[in-house]
Image 1: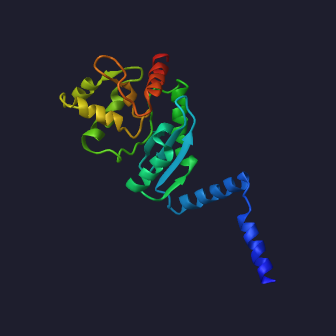
Image 2: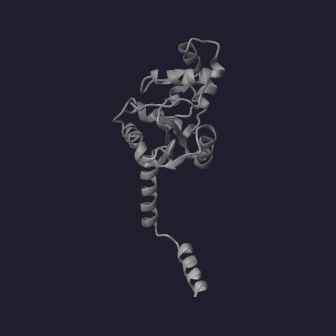
Image 3: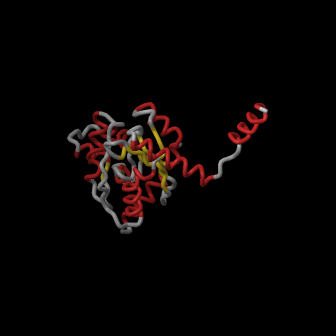
Length: 204
């Protein structure tokens, strides 16, 4: 008799869970983990004109915006290594970021008002990234001009590296930085994404 009961239990445990039940269980996990302060990094994904974006936030603010080409699983692994293992998909924590991005892509927002966590960058890279929002919507600057802006005119190459490693693309607008000759230069989201962002802002 006990063998039959064990078989029944195993069958129940191995049965597929329907998506609605799974979503309900995850929502409960999300609520309880948040209530207990067990989530150090919350994340979600959103659709956009430049593809699916991963958004991640800590208690300090938005810490990561990642393009699909960066491999979202790898980005989450990196956050686990550098920030905390306590990561959970918790879309509600990213509601403000998702809303402001929607407004930006809909040409209804020209500046972001989100709290940012810049702790993934250090030193000169972080300094450059802090200054990038000073480049206005629809405007562009060269790498050399940004180097001058941060008080180190010779650090053109280092500015390029700071833009290439920007953990918060779109929100921290490294797409507005071009080569001195006006060509696009590199971009973490790819040149198609950079072109889309620049054209979106130019058309507003």
